[in-house]
Image (tube, rainbow over all chains, first blue to last red; front, side, top):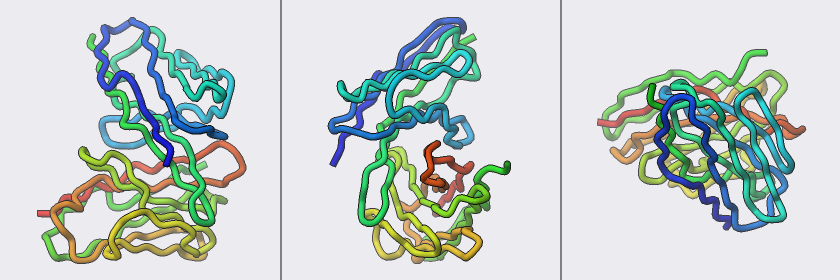
Length: 111
Length: 112
C-alpha cells in the first residue's frame, strides 16, 4: 500500500517563528488533507488540497502531486499552534476508501 | 452546521467487558468511518459505513464491529475488551462531494 511519511517528527519553535512541515507519499494521489490534532485529541481539518496552494490566515499548504509531496507552512507561530500535525491521503479499498495517515509532526511552540 | 459528535468522551472499562461508542455525522453526510489511534500504531482505519451498509473494514479482529442507522448515526462495539484496546477512537463523516473528512472529538477508552 501507499506509504505516507512526514518530517520532521518533532519540531520546537519560539513563538513568532515560521516553520515548514513536509508530507511525502509513495504513490499518486487525487487528494490530500492536513489535520491538526489538539491536546484533547480532536483532529481539526486544516486543508483539503489535492493540488496547488491554499492559504488560511497564518497557515498555507502546497501539494505538488506530480512530485508526490505536500508542504504545510506555519508563519508567526503561536503557542496555540502546538500539537500534532497529520497529513492523510484517501485510498480505494473494497467498495469505498479509507484514509492513510502519516505518523505526524509534533510541534511545540514555546512562549 | 453542527459537526461530528462522538459520545462518550471518556470511558474506563475492565478487561473482558464490552463497550459501545456512538458517532453522529454532519447532517447530510451518509458516510461514517472509524479510526483507532494508539501511540504505537498511529491512526488506523477500522471500518466505514454508508447508507447502513459496511463497505470497508480494516485489519482488526472480529471483536470490533459496528453498525449504522437510517439517520446515519453509527455505533461501534468492542467485545471482550483487552488491555491493548486502550486507545482514542475517532469517527469521521464525509459527503464524498469534495471537502474531505471531518472528525469528531473522539472517545478515549481505557481498559484496566
